[in-house]
Image (tube, rainbow, N blue to C red; front, side, top):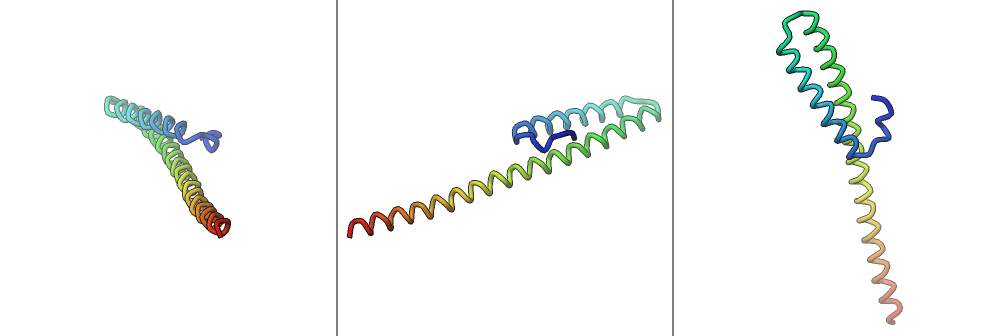
Length: 94
């Protein structure tokens, strides 16, 4: 996985879909293959694709966690700002 750490969540999702399709195609090739050498080669490629898929899924999970954390922070700040505004209005009305 080269430089995938800088991919956005939609880009990661696209890569995940592509690799899942690659794995599906490799499995189909393995099923149609008759030779032991072909099977070994395809098995290695499947393992490589699965490893990349696992990394991308983990990275996508981190992106989702970051987005959730930012939303929690905004909600928290929003509540504090709302509270501060109501206190300010109340003080000014006195």
